[in-house]
Length: 179
Image 1 (cartoon, helix red, strand yellow):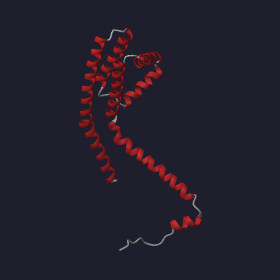
Image 2 (cartoon, rainbow, N blue to C red):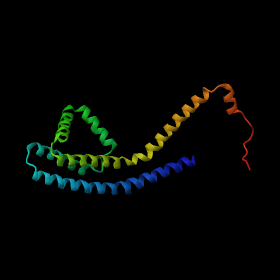
Image 3 (cartoon, helix red, strand yellow):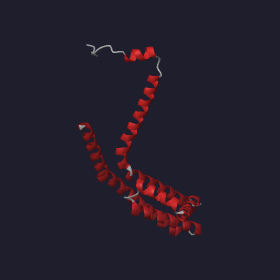
Image 4 (cartoon, helix red, strand yellow):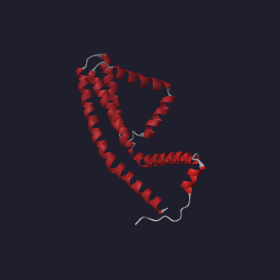
């Protein structure tokens, strides 16, 4: 029992260090990169004259501004809630799909490059903000994996012929270490 308490204390400390030191430092770097992207988008806005490009630039600008505003809360729970809302609200889903289609279909290589960098930054923000779950999900996943292996081993042992099973389970007395 004391080992379990020590393990939980270790996970709590690791989570605290990650959430209070590591993640904010990583988010600060990503926020800076988002600001650089905003400036790049403003430059594109002043250079590009085609109406379709202006629409894509506006969508890009909205996306980057949304990321800057929600950088601290863009995590598993928020994304799951957004997905749920999209399934409920068909009008919102259609609006979102139209925006993504506009950005994906834009002919400008510069806008495409900024769009890909924006998506990449959003994915990194998601990973960083969801990193605190790592301390709880990985041990759970490892436990499930070990249980599956134990299940397979049990099935294998049960299917062994009797003579082999008796050799394995024969009590040969106390174990001694060779000297």
